Length: 137
Length: 67
Image (cartoon, rainbow over all chains, first blue to last red; front, side, top):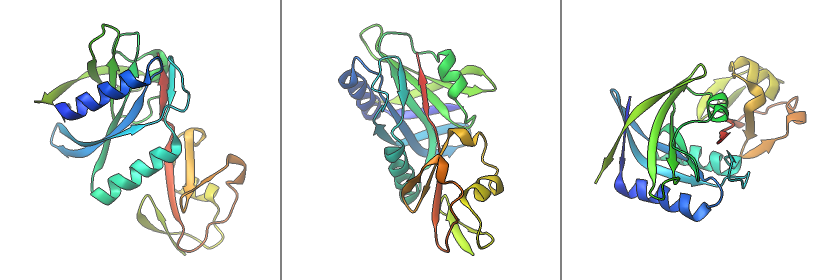
């Protein structure tokens, strides 16, 4: 599975990740699926209610609002993202343990090098594999 | 009676509880699921509450992680 998103959405995630420092940020991705391609049409910036640099939990109220918005707009949930302020963009043991939807793409934006780095993963049965990301300029 | 689950109509028996619906829908790992009925979040100790005609139910899976 490949995931495509616009540069403007990449930049919004990066901006949120920087503004949320030193804590992790999080959000949801919505759009549609065309064969093996997930096309992100809207991102939802959510609050990390953990307010932590090492953990995130999405605000359930905002999560519900996002789900209802997706339905109204005719979009499908494609996955979610969160940031790693100081570690690489790869899923931690906790990320893998708490990933419960094999249909979802799990995106991680790392700020460890100073510049935002975004990677996507498929997580199923305790194993994570890299998904290709295409950022449209 | 008719309710909605994730925006889709469902016919369930009158008197069915939220817990009954969780089982009927085959919700996986319910301990990680938050339930809302008509936009209100239901505390875990109130899942025995009966549903009513026209209720709109959403199951929200916990999304979180850590580094």
